[in-house]
Length: 132
Ligand SMILES: [Zn+2]
Image 1 (cartoon, rainbow, N blue to C red):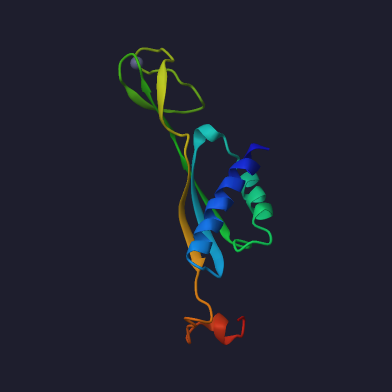
Image 2: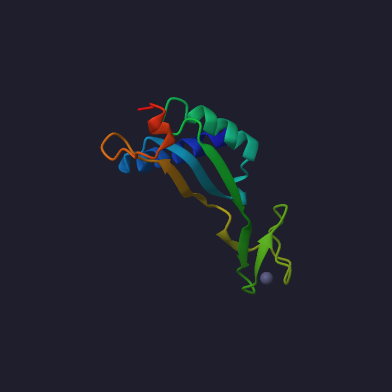
C-alpha cells in the first residue's frame, strides 16, 4: 500500500514539528497531495489513523487538498491541466510534456495544542478539568 509509506513520512514531519514546539498534542494536519501520486483519500486517512496511534498526533484530524496535475508541452510551451491522466497537448497533440505540479506531498499546516505546567493557562478548560 503506497499510501502507508507516504503517511509515514508525513507523520514523521508532523511529530518533529510537534516536538520542536513542545506541543501536548497535534490537533489538525492539512496536507496538499498532488494528483499524480494517485492517493486514495480514504486509504490515506485510514493509514494515518494507524500511523499516529500512540503518538502525539493520535486523534488528530487530517485534511486533504488535492493539487491538480499541471504540465507544459515541450513542443509549443503550452501549459495545461491534465485530467484523467491524458498527457496530450491540446494544441499539437503530442505527449511530450514536463510536469509542473501534481507530484507534491506537502504538510501545509499543523495545529498543535501547546502548553504544559510551565505556562499553564488558567483559562484553559482542559487544564481546569485536571487533564494535567
Ligand atoms: Zn504542444
